[in-house]
Image (cartoon, rainbow, N blue to C red; front, side, top):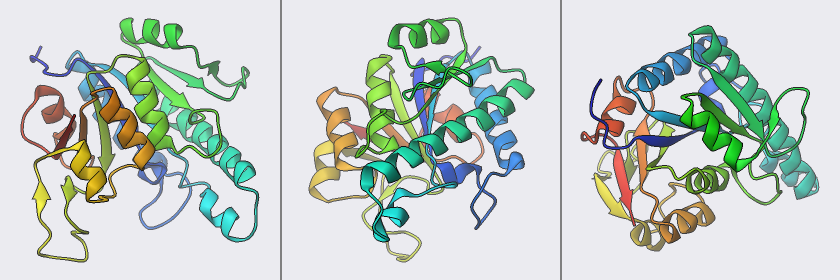
Amino acid sequence: MSTLKYQRVLLKLSGEALAPKGETGIDPVAANMIAKQVKEVVELGADLAIVIGGGNIWRGKIGIQVGMDQATADYMGMLATVMNSLVLMDALEQVGVTTRVQTAIQMQSVAEPYIRRRAIRHIEKKRVVIFAGGTGNPYFTTDTAAALRAVEINADLLIKATKVDGIYNCDPHGNPDAIKYHEIRYIDVLSQQLEVMDATAISLCMANKMPLMVLNLWEEGSLQKALRGEPTGTLVIP
């Protein structure tokens, strides 16, 4: 078994990670691909929890733009994260990874309620725990939920998996001269207004000295490299 620099990790996935390329909805092939990557990390001996967004199903900003009450739009987004969590749970179980879904919005017919000590116990038993329903409150993003859960389960590292291989000083897709940061401080992320996570999530990580790794989920071996402490993505430090 490989030596891990980070033993307990929370992985933040966007809802778009489950969507067909360039579309909305859920792609079982994408779910299966993510499940296989997660299995590889679990087989390294890591303790893993996951927070996934719901943007592939519903984006609250769209509802707000047409006059919908923000709290209602946000609750709909939370329900979308539950659907994505169930999809990912099924994909993980199919590849032999024991998984539990806990949701901040109680719906005991489909998932456990979020209970911190129970979640930690699942993780100690080498089960992957998927946290659904955001924080359970409107006006907070799933980025903030990921930061909160990472702190609550005493994670060693929070990983935000994206389609970009780290943090740049500007959008690398629109600017070929964009400069990649291999390491950056939280205070610099805030002062430069880099779009890594929302300010609430960044502030929560900074206050609790939670290291954050931003990496490309689709780059082969990126998750394993991150857990071993090998160079990959961008590390945000307190």
